[in-house]
Length: 118
Length: 117
Image (cartoon, rainbow over all chains, first blue to last red; front, side, top):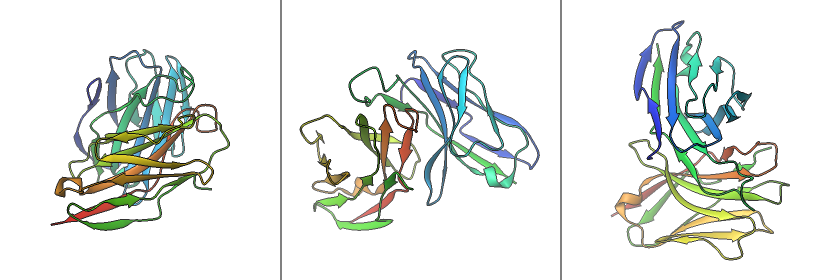
């Protein structure tokens, strides 16, 4: 998964603590997004961004904050961690799907972050 | 309504045999892409194969092929000559160019494939 750096890989939090998952890409991609993966649920979209300064909510945004001050970085913030946020988190980046006649396959994933909230 | 449906939570296949993993999708966007990802026990998402909605031929990548039936909205993954290393979770996903998903991937719930020696 060259090009998308996601940190940390593992983290244990206590309920109520805050933390930030970092995501950076060096491919000048417009699109960046955060997904969470829970058993039996596939990957669900938390927040996404279509460019610097532009963010929007996905399917499961509650409890998370994002910002996109630069093209390269898209951090995900947990403001007050809850056990329900125990999950595996993936960051992804890509070019806009509208840059070609059909959405291309240039979607890159970070290696994932395993978060446990106790 | 689910946009990506994978009806097989788990499947077994004998080593060296072929296996088909099912995926149906729902979209009204004429421009979309279909993806298959493999997720081994180590957790990373590995891209396997891609099919564009305007592609005339079924995609193939080595032992992987995508059986694309546009009228049926079906995008099944075929793995030929299964290997023990193919044991993993497999996800089907769709990306619409102009639909409500705003260019993000929509994932199915996955199929866990186990290859028996």
